[in-house]
Length: 155
Image (cartoon, rainbow, N blue to C red; front, side, top):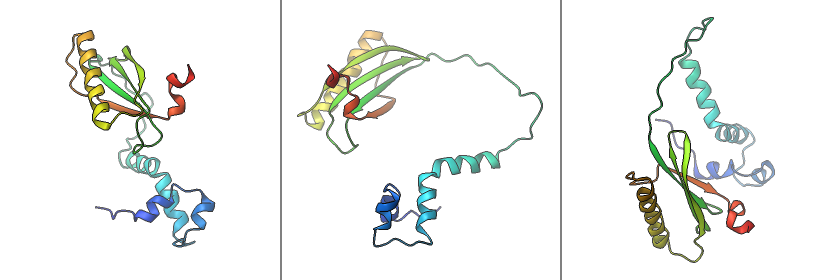
């Protein structure tokens, strides 16, 4: 198991280069490499995985077709600045296979407690379940958008 990245190094990779240079812990030998790796970690890991599992290249790739299963997925959309910030607005989308079949209009949540937001989420699930006649017990994905993208603020 790899060693965890130090907290200050993890916070430092999010900063700009000039801000990182002003930190008291800055080490010109190690920090640039660590910042580069943390910023590109997913891409680097993906490249390593693909190299390990590379197959010999053939002239013709094989193609198969699989029937797409019909499944229903509910996606919740939060409009807020950060994950720990209060929720500005909430919305939802319901997908079946590859198509959006239902969309819940955004509603403002400013001034509501976290428990009230959870209640709204439960109400959204139950209303969508009734509308589509499909049992939806939880949201399968969560999307976080900045409040500036909230359609209610444009009206």
